[in-house]
Image (cartoon, rainbow, N blue to C red):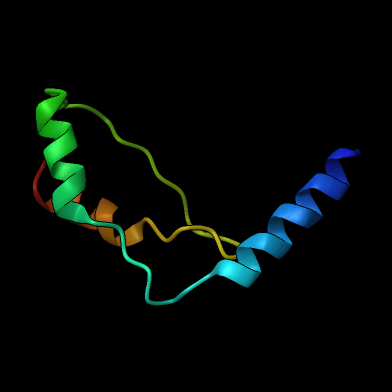
Length: 67
């Protein structure tokens, strides 16, 4: 299977399963970061595109917490 065909299938699956109501659980993320002792580090993200998980809200909250 070619890369382009795989991308089309993945995009179709994301589109079919996308929900605007889906939220990332910030409390769970913070719990994991604390458990793994991850602090004072750089955490990267991305701008969601083509029905990807929206991580903007969690990145804004992490920035406010100065993680």
